[in-house]
Length: 429
Ligand SMILES: [Zn+2]
Image (cartoon, rainbow, N blue to C red; front, side):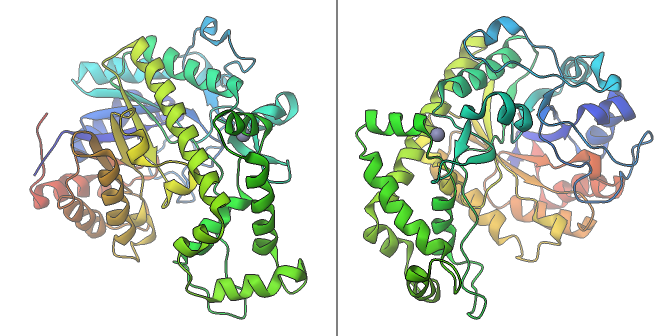
């Protein structure tokens, strides 16, 4: 089969420590990469994520990034319409350079596609809690949901649009990718401990959203303006939330309802028929995300109409975060799915990977590019990476994407090239 792209992500500290040339040359030569992108705004997360220490960083054993800092220059004039301003890294070894330029200049020299990623969160959560608590999502009781910013808040929207616009306008990239967290999904609800718990219980996953977001005043206003009876929705969902939290010791009035529901095989359909307000809440969130993506798309294209807007899906059920791919297909140019089951040894034999890729394809249609990620990192083996690529070659994908170079061993990077050859995958642009 033919694909258009093999992408690899790189972090600013990888480039600083190992050198831009070393990082890029490794993925190009060993994994046939023809597309490199900088994780330009990275959330707080220990690196490497899936192993104790770096396998090939010569300067350090591990790295602890700051929360959601920016590693390339921005034009502050683009942030006039929002109180949120770009926050840059304060680490000395990363401050001097524009790391996106560093990567794109060398990438272009090697005829590579280039991109930037805005990761899960795009603003420091502690700063937001201290100075701008209004921008964070609220749960059904009005409490802050950490790290989740409300996309119905105009200050948030303006900041996000400015980040996308500025990155595209002032850098030489072909795509801008984001895995920004959308509406908080809550945790899936489980059956009580003494009953059999089905990890695939989809009613439990759906019930999680009543513990998620967002129930802030901006959402309330937006919902009422677009015709929803928001106060009734919230009131009904508060009743459902009582049921979700009921245990043998708490919310006793709802405990039997909870246990019977979690022990039953009621479909999500049954739950939605009983709670039309839950459906309306989900629909409102879906409409909000579609509007957000539309506005971000307009910002990107106004900066450079040739640059792709790529969403990097990281959820098994993105619909529970408000993301319905059919609703946003007109505003996205490509989608990356970041299933990394190889790093767990693929115990489900790639079931989630297949299901999610087909779900996304069904939503976005055949004209938009679908990029499948895989994880050449510890707990994966060369055999598993090659097997994963072989399965991906049967799923109509348009590209592959490595996640992530920092934790990959050279042996696993080599397996990418071998796997592509064995699967008969060729790059044809
Ligand atoms: Zn909100």
